[in-house]
Image (cartoon, rainbow, N blue to C red; front, top):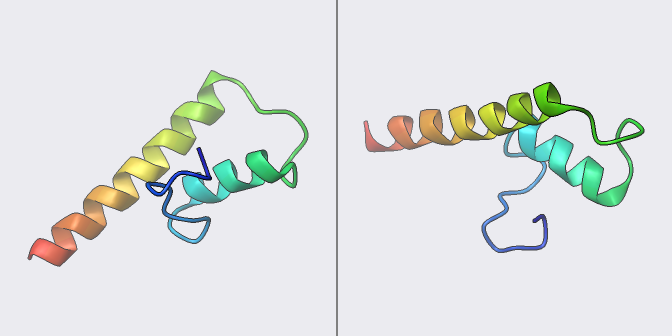
Length: 57
């Protein structure tokens, strides 16, 4: 996922940072449970939406 052109980079959101850490094996040990992945997805989505709203005024 982190190798696709759609990936915005670890600096985009906390969720993207977590994805990058998981991909590189530098984050906490293990991948976490459903709650961790829901939080990761929400972080990505809310950051993306809030930036889009800011850009479009």
